[in-house]
Image 1 (tube, rainbow, N blue to C red):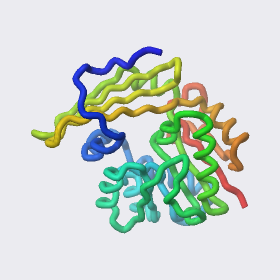
Image 2 (tube, rainbow, N blue to C red):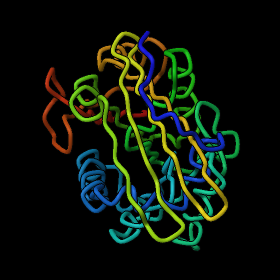
Image 3 (cartoon, rainbow, N blue to C red):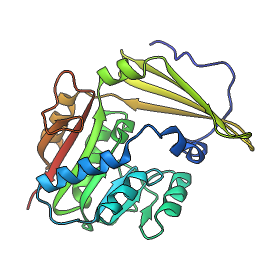
Length: 258
């Protein structure tokens, strides 16, 4: 296995999405959240799940996607393992419910409450092995209303090689706040590494993130063999075309049937 080539100067190690929460929205300015919401809305209308159903966004982060779904008329709640990210989300959407919970368990999330659940922007890739992924999918199935829809996306090996192999970026936000991010993809082990250094008035902090990159075929096999979901679709990025060899992000649409 190759070693990740990060700079020598390190900050104090801290949990993923803790110190980064204060700068996360700035780091994600390139993400077109209205487009994400419009696509999910289009998928739900295509699946005929009803008019503006309740939904739960798993790995909701600071609530940017949920904000856009609220603008479209949905009532959306969220869950996330990071207290700091949830604090940002609660400030953004004081009328929504938020749970500090994560896959594969979702212990704090009520069952049979949401007809729609989402897990977006490759959050599923944080599940580091096939057994955990299968457990997570079964958990979502059991938490969903019947009937229900689960929409999630993953990035492909092609995405990591093209966009995040030896990638780095940085930004100074103000006199006391800055971040520096480095990424490396281990093609042999199919793991994406992201190292983020956050400079704040409190000091310098370091977050280490790892994501497992699965083939679409592997995910489809887990869905078929390990869960009771019906896999309705595996779409190419922001389209209704079937994902294929050149797909960099795939959207999976799963149905829980009566």
